[in-house]
Image (cartoon, rainbow over the protein chains, first blue to last red):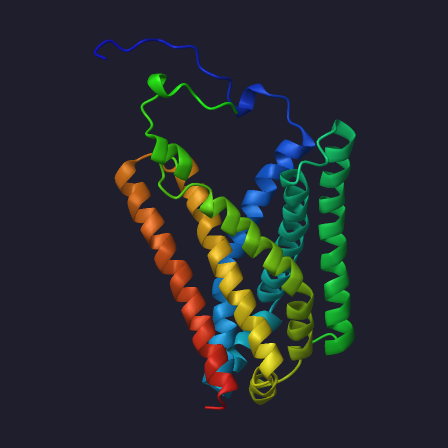
Length: 132
Length: 133
């Protein structure tokens, strides 16, 4: 174990041609990490609601601002995308959808579905809130 | 997989039967990741409905909504499932990218602290509102 043997290295990510499923695999992880830190916003909101009117007004001021709205919109998309992309993984876990056409379809479905659901939720939110 | 010839393996028959592997926890994280994922898939529609119900309401209104028993239970279930799910997920990310053993240990520990703190703070807030304090 003294001499270091030069073994052949397995090719890494940059060697391969980018495919849709590869890109979406990283997006799944990135949205997961974003949602992880996004729970701070959820916890802040719940604690504020439990604390009192002043604390809750602070949250509403933040979520009503442009930056706040962008963050919450991004959070909604990350959640919807991660949900559908995760369901895709559950399909694969069960052993289905491994044909090239099937995995492409599942991946496009997660991508388009995630954006569509995000827009739908925000339309519902504006319809209820009257554009708050 | 066919059973390996016992004379050619270092693994004891007990270890093979337990099939927990080098981590001593087997596939429990993999399984819990899926259980919490399915739980959140079932809970996502009610949770979105709750969030939509809260739009435009002030603190008193929000507190009123959270004091409803079914809503409090839906939120508590979602918080527990998501905290557990994200704890496992972030640990996988850390183990993939952090190669320094000490920094990895500290990161995994910090991940546990973060997820526990976020979950407990959220659970406390829900319980406080639903008990009407």
